[in-house]
Structure formats: C-alpha cells, structure tokens
Length: 400
Image (cartoon, rainbow, N blue to C red; front, side, top):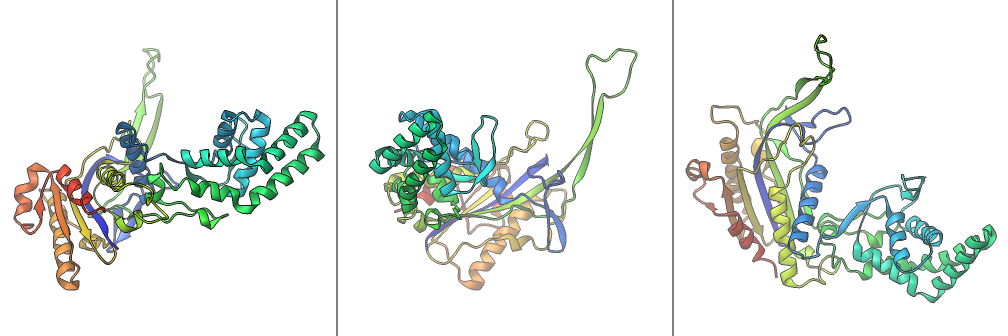
C-alpha cells in the first residue's frame, strides 16, 4: 500500500502541552530514561482543528466532522429545520441517538440528553438522517401518531408510536442513511477514523497513523511557583493574594505521522471525491500535521513553535516505519542544544534502515530551518532540502 510518512524534530520551550490525571506533563520511559511525552490524541485534535480552519479558508467544505456527545441536540436541530415540532423532534432524536450509541441519563445545560461517548459524524451525515426520517412514509405516520400522543399527553399512545418507529429504524435505516453521505464532506473522519460499537458497519478505519511524540533526550518535569497580587489590596497590606504551583517541561520532540494514500481513495473512505479533492485533503493533512500544536496553557506557557526539521517520505509498498529508535540512547545536552544531534541521528537511522532492510522510498525530501541547513548538509547530502510548498507538492503528486 502506498503511504506517506512525516518525521519531525521540534523543540518546545517551557510548556505543558498535555497533562495526566495529576496535572503533570505526561512522560514515558524509553531507553531506560524518562522522556517528555505528548499523547497522539492531543496532537491529533490540534491537527484536526487546524485542518478544519484551512478548509474553511479555502472554502473546500471537506472537513466537516465533529466529535460530540450532543447528538440529540444536533439531530433535533435538523428535525426542527424540517418542520417537526420541538417535543416530537427531541423524542425522535433521542431514539435515533440511542440506536447509534447508548444514551446517558444525564442532560446538558439546555436539557438535552447526551450519548455516553463522543461520536464522530459530519454535517451531511446528520442531514442524511433527517432527510431519511422525513421522507419515509412509515416514519412520517409514526411521527404523526407521536405528535398526537404528546399533545394529548397519552403515554400509552406515545409508547405505541415509538415502538412503530423503532421497528422501521431497527431495519438499518439510520446506518443506511449515514453511509449514503459517503464521507463527501468528512475527510477528517476518513483520516482519523470512527469507532461505532453499536453498529460496526459505521466504523471507519483511520487512514492516518500517529505515534506519541517523545523527547529525544532525558526530560524531567519542573515546578513553577507563582503568586498573584490583589490590585485593590490596601497599601498597608503586603504579600500575595494567592500562591500555587504548576509543572512544566522543555523538550525537543521526535514526532511521527503517516497516511495510507491508497486506503484514503477506497470505497470506505474518499472514493467519492475527485483526484483533485483528495490531493487537497492530503495537502491540508500535511500542512496541519507540520504546523499544529496542542493549545494547553497557551496563555501562560505558550508552546507555539515550528519544527526545525521535517523529513517527508513516500513508499509504494510495505508499512510506515518510525525512526524513534534513533533516540533509544538519549541525546545528551551540548552547547548546541539537542536539535542538531537529534536530526543527525534521525537521518542516520533512516539510512541504516534503508541499507539493512532494503526499505526503499520513491520520494524523500526534507524541510530544514535556514540557520541549520549548512550543518545538516554535512551529514545529509543524500537527502535534498526544499521549501514546505515544494515538499507538499512533491508528496501530493503521488495521489492518483
């Protein structure tokens, strides 16, 4: 299967990009030493959000997926737009949501029930459900009976109407409606996948793969002691109004992402799109993966940086391969920092894997910060450097 790989070296200063249950920056042990770690889920969300922003800016309408527990609310809005009364539309939305994913007994601040887990659906999929409901004669008859029962406050008639509707919906009408949308506006679902335990026919295997970013070196969490002053405190009083502590770390990360280009074009994913649209999707994926960063504590410990080095690879066969073992022996600090040695080790690992296992690539190029290109050229003459736009264009050209 043809796939692309992105291998990224990126330094992040004082930050807490991703916290554990104790509010500490996440860590992992690799090569016998502690490393700074960011969960792939955290970075993927930042990538999804940026991809959606790019899609809106380019008016491509290709990234309309939303992960939410508010399925009842979302469906109710669609039904209301199609003229179904409020109470009836809520009841129908609850029944449909309970088919897709079990309803939670708790409600949100607006009184709508939530499903128990977040689900990933697009605007066109919600519209397809609503259109199916309002165009089915059997369901319309059930809706009429349901409205009458609600207006007359007859629980018996309401139960009968719901059972009648349930029989129609249980025949797979909802799944059929969702699949009819064919992810035409949901490249994010095709890229990042969807798990539906109640109906595996709605599950979408992710075309992309991510690792947990790890620091290339040993990293310890540190503690920031801070205080806040009361601006209206009387002058004769001194001292802080409050004090507290926060944990943080600083790290040079190795990040890895891959995308199965062939899978993205199959019938279960984005076959309905044109070649040009799929190229646009992959372009957005590459740019978002390179540029996005988790936003945690962005107002007090802003970690927004750009990578120092990005290695882009296209392979026609096999499966994606990480280069993280380049850092099993942790990089040691030097007067030049961690970045240059991390890049050198990663390039060496790439060459070693190719030579040892014959893992050839049909495309290999890299983007490097201008100030470090001369040093990198000393140990990476086999890999051409280019601009970001050239890297993206080169990788996208393999989409057919």
